[in-house]
Length: 139
Image (tube, rainbow, N blue to C red; front, side, top):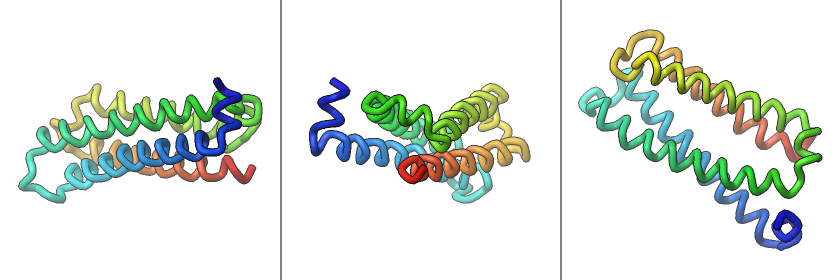
């Protein structure tokens, strides 16, 4: 299967499109929720916006994760030797830990300084994930 993905002229580029679409859904909806946590769109109920945006974040993560695993399978040795890839994987773990802390402490209900710091950290981490993802091709 991995050889077929790597050899087919359209397979890998299509996986990259799915990967980028997933990242766009994920990051776009996190930024939308972050803006609300920082006070923008105060007329929008946080709980309702969070339900919608976090559902789309989950879909985006699933798309990015599934396509990423398939792309990884086509060249695991090269990717594991790539510093940008390993940093990206570490950042993904950090993003997951930050999300667990955010939801575990009930930050959406508090909307305090810690919640804002967590949301800002999330966006910075995900932007760093994006940057590392692009650098994979150049290292």
